[in-house]
Length: 140
Image (cartoon, rainbow, N blue to C red; front, side, top):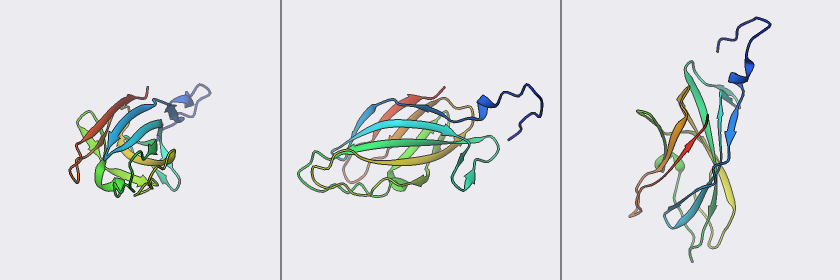
């Protein structure tokens, strides 16, 4: 990261940017809501490499099913697409299963993508007979 050492440096371009899109998806019978998406140059213990930035997606999951749902690890099914880049998660604390009737369970998935990207598609890949699910959002 290059920060000009002048009295007029614009440091705002280095600060985190967040949106609260409230976008909804259905995947594996679960109701998923993108509660928040944040662009940031670092996550605890890691700084983004030159020309890259982290996108941290916070999700809320509700299980309306009459059984426990086990989508598995987001490393296997979650992707973030921007332009010609499709990124797998770098970090996640999203649960791998959701109990019957559980509502409001939250977690995050963090991706490393090219800097200056503003339009994103969160993709949940098809698995176990479930169709692919997507939602779009923008951070500007």
